[in-house]
Image (cartoon, rainbow, N blue to C red; front, side, top):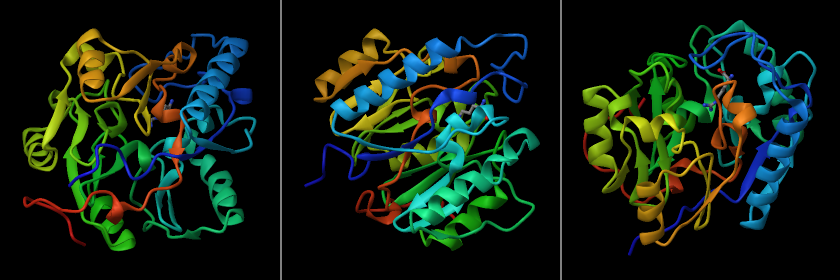
Length: 289
Ligand code: ARG
């Protein structure tokens, strides 16, 4: 018998938006002339934390740092696999200064730090989510395909590679949201044909988003047990989630959308063990390192 809910998603790392802003443009959504309302951002972030806690999640806090406006997007801090932490290697210099702070937190928390080789780019859980005993990882816009074999070597988990072809959906976590052992929210039009095939073989019961739904960032949701904390919930998506026994809860994160992020991006799950996430690895292409 498979489990309807995820084996992970009860402990998260988050960073308050004290120094958040849109100070540069590194994705299709960011406009440096756009002003962030910091009070609103604080209130939205607090409401997200409260909603996650009410759903049963524990939230750990990463100290905000001046001059690192995107540090709030802790999904990009790296990949957690049991007691192992693989720091990100950011594509853009604007975010590279975050790494030292992320690593300091994980070292203090007792994690073993495993580094990806220098010269390759990977943006952490924003581009890598566990499903079916594997790590599904996106590449092209923000992570390199070459990092996938290295990730597989470091974690010991098979990595399923998916190319992200829509620059508006530039991280995997804008196109893919695991819900349980067999179910996930997917946006296949954001993937290359080969990646879509890989995912089709991996996810037995997909909740498929159309273009407009995906652009609402509804795949960028935090799943805590049966609660799905979403930045937006298109009607048909909500109906399907409810039919599957989930409770969709919308948390407005409009200030963070100005930077191209939403609920999931603001969180990093700390209780992930990639190989424990789902029993079977289906057949099909994979990087075994
Ligand atoms: N402004 C941030 C960037 O472009 C947003 C990161 C969103 N994170 C995510 N996991 N999708 O890097």
